[in-house]
Length: 172
Image (tube, rainbow, N blue to C red; front, side):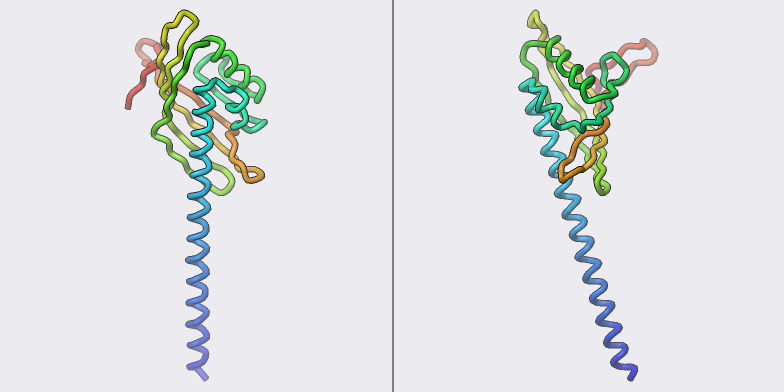
């Protein structure tokens, strides 16, 4: 009687291990899919940025987005306020802009993700002068109805505390 119990127990252990491995593989694939979707979102954002397409830029942010940007005011507590920030940026620099995103790090935890990256941009002013700035960006994203959107953004530059001046071309 013991031998059949051992066989049944062994089969149950094998089935449990297989189901667990399949579950872990599915979770890993889901996280990889989410990371790819978020990377695609950043690519879409960068393309829209270089086209100065504020509507597409803002489609990447959730309606309840909160942002800290490098320019005053200190915070942009609503989607409309942040949209105006983008409109003002492109009005201040009406010429061509370029931007590259590097050092992208994406962490997904269920329906929430956080990212960090470096944006390196050049803006052209009304008089044709160029402004080059490198910023650090940290985002929190939420997945809702199958879509990832930025719900919180923090854009910053390092500051030299001895001079009080921003380091607009920060390097590691």
